Length: 274
Image 1 (cartoon, rainbow, N blue to C red):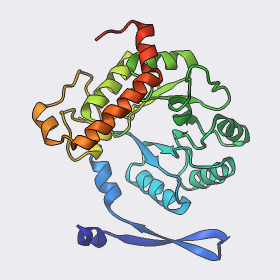
Image 2 (image 1 turned 90 degrees about the horizontal axis):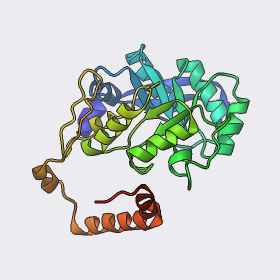
Image 3 (image 1 turned 180 degrees about the vertical axis):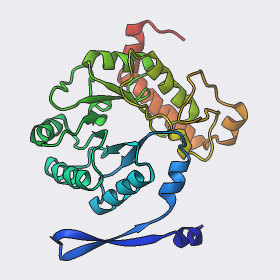
């Protein structure tokens, strides 16, 4: 495995515009992983790229995707990792190297920082809010005005399809439906949410199952599309990939904490029974 990776490695020396921390050239190692990864998403015309840890490497990675898929829409996800000043510098650097982006997801951690960033930007970067919504104590109570252009909806963190849809309707912003590294079952709920929205202004970020080497059900990606339907787990696969008892106990305790932290109140308010 390591020999194959090393055989595909390329190292480039990228000149800096000015001396930075005593260096004038930044060396970056590249593997063919990007090409192989993109081949798993055949037919997709939108790519989200995680950035935020190393600007030089981020630029090379984004530029590589742009070169491989010149017509694709590119999104960046920072997971709230930049300060306002870092975001201003890094976004301009990336823009200068790779051109326009569809949007930047959560460049800074807080609403106050996002609002300050948008006020200072001179290039039109659309900002998508993720953590500021799904980690909010009350996602209905936050004010996104002047901070967020696009709303990220994820079914599980927002409490299900009905509640996620209600949050989207409340904030009256363009929406994009996405997922984390969910199973095919979880992804199917994201698809049902997307299909239930009055409009979809952006491609969904729901093809993350391609990053798994195994799953508990089938939900194939065909020509960049996923079919909307109910998905049930395969019983044999559930048994094959079952976690040890101690991890099952951990998940049960986590579910219990979530239930008593607010889910019980929400269930009663909506009159749900099971």
